[in-house]
Length: 185
Image (cartoon, rainbow, N blue to C red; front, side, top):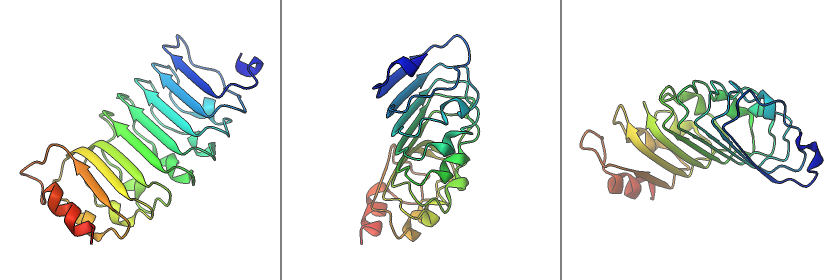
């Protein structure tokens, strides 16, 4: 029962043996969830002051419930092989940073098309970047593996400032320095 901690701002929950009950901590701004059993985010939906959410090695399949986190600015999801749907993040108008790393069932990100708030985006594995030109606020993009290899979509973004990826694969349509020169104009 965290209600006794009336000034709690940061909370790390790791290796929970069972699903976590609804968290109701008005002052919480930073939450780390590692190896938890919940399959969605409804148990954190009342954390209205939350700014930063980090999720790693979890059983979560969908981020349903996260759309109610009206102050969330940063979301990092790592090593979570069951995650299949994070589209509810588009309803969070304050979310400016999204990091998705090693979530093997999540490589298709076209739901980010028309996203209005994300400025900084990291995707370890992505099928295509065709959605980037329609993202309204995207400034910085980083990725490791682009399956279709087509970087030409990035040239059509009016807001993109920097692109970083590693490795610089021969199968990619453009080199990193070439893309950055063209979008920097």
